Length: 130
Image (cartoon, rainbow, N blue to C red; front, side, top):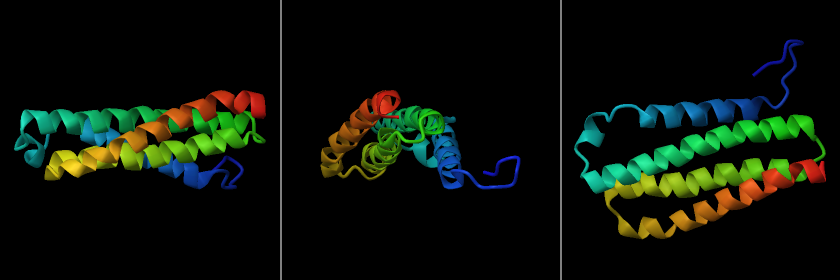
């Protein structure tokens, strides 16, 4: 969170990346007690949510690199926020769907997928806009 010289540069972004990645890794571990009670279909949904959360935690690391390389690139910042929104909408709705069985939550998932896709497009445009 801190640079060698003691200043905080993008500290909240680093903290967010680390926490997101740690949560994704925790969910990818061997199923805990409550996960072992899920039906196989619900467990597959839960694993999909964890997998995409982990992919986009790595994407946030790429965003941090892009922001450091091209500080003027607003598209890199947008990519980061879109990855965070996508994680909440996509993975969050799938976690809730798997754990509660409330089917209408599946309707929120494509919005998170759209945020993920737009985030990757913004990240790809960062070198041009920076």
